[in-house]
Length: 157
Image: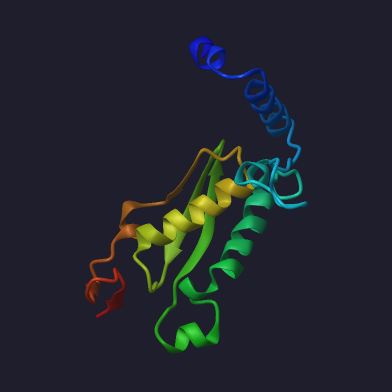
């Protein structure tokens, strides 16, 4: 770290320290040179209005947000159910900083992809969460599906 910072100019070091200070305090910042109001990815991650503290209620709320945001991969709408997408994601339990979800039904995407997308979304909204997993490895089994080609999409048999 000393070697890295000694190679920086004082302006670069001041910028790094400012960004680190603002980010660690939960404040958003605008990168110099960006248009007014444009936020960097780091500021989005640390923005106080977008992240929540770890409570079971917040996990349930964020899980509902994920259902709404990624609606096409779940079977909550009549349109999705008409084409055989019946997949649901529910909170099984919270164990400290770990969240365990339950996947059921049929998904358009592979179940590992569904877990990854939902898990990433939950962890971005509640940074205290260190892991999102499923109740049982069987919930990641896509053996009832067949590959359709190079796109990675799968259909139920």
